[in-house]
Image (cartoon, rainbow, N blue to C red; front, side):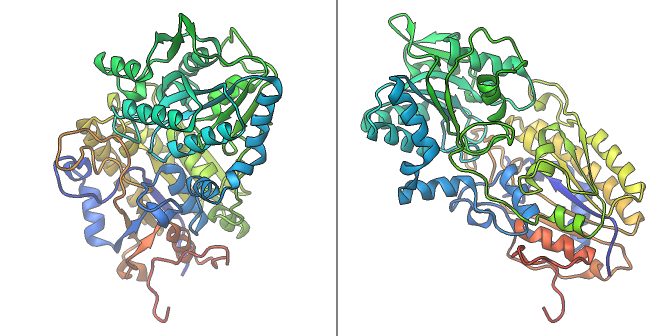
Length: 519
């Protein structure tokens, strides 16, 4: 039997974590999810490490999670690809990276390495930076400068000083590399067209305009003393005898070593796009050789160190090929995840695929408005369900993740409670149409807001498994179905196809979570 509509609900950052005082999911009042997990078929899904194509023990993230959810097989992630290239030596023969080295060497110019310096593994990893320093040293480059972006979101909020000290130690060991600027990711990695933030990072890197400091670690500690943690460090320019250590000038080479695209696009565009209009640039370096670690945007005409691997037949394409209609929606913060990432890295919608973006609220941090745009997002999606136009719907609720990143426990509890109420409305509307709702998540966050055993705030993701609930009408055989244990995110797309009665393509190696007799 085929069901319509099938509604896939992603509770971003909601996992089944331990019962301890730092778990905002357990602390919240969640009558809807409590009832769904008690009454309907339920299991847990693994969403980290090798189960999503990451290194062992590496926490998952929204990009990786949605890529696996939509692909229907475990997608080998960028961090693992780059790690493998370092281990087998192929990184040191990478044409794009060698192009940057040769450009700087021929012109006697500077090589700039910029990106997020931490071991968070969501947007970058510091070991990739160390390998690039090693590459530069092997080719005899002496003018190698690092533009540090501090994390505090996928890592503890005051860990940046330690990561930068490790960088200084590694640079000294390798024999090249000097920190030129330090910017909190709030400025250097904005993705919401808040160009005033990007401008501050740009001015530090390109013009040497920022907070002047002489020691990288002390600069970060001074920020801590002022109550400003890693994510929000106002761009710092390191000085040497009264002048900036380095600025980005004509003829220089740049390697942006972030491997995740969404938060690397704006700064890349500001530096490389001749027609850029996001803000007035007082200095526009020419004759740059600018390498992106991965493909940040298809329209960027820039060398790419690690081009994308294609997901040939993601779930959205299979549904489209079946002649069915689908609806993808989220608010701004997660819109790319239910479109670009869920569709296997494809920018354009498939035939029959409608996309609706609900703007995220314009607040400095989401603890100030933990409900975010969940209510208008739900209202719009209810209209889509009740229109009877769509066979498949995917909706993402950003709140548990985005508010979890702020470190505010009370706000995270409100975020979880908001989403719980919205899920109830979606499920009710879906069942009223004879449809099926699949409620799950991509990774954890709000389930651990403190480091267990301490009172230290934890703002990063977790490795806890996420819930998966199959909500079907009372007269459906699925209502009392048994679900497999030991599943992972890549099993969700095959489960959707199973419920919809669509054959699973051979490219999808995941397995439906629904146990069928004889299978």
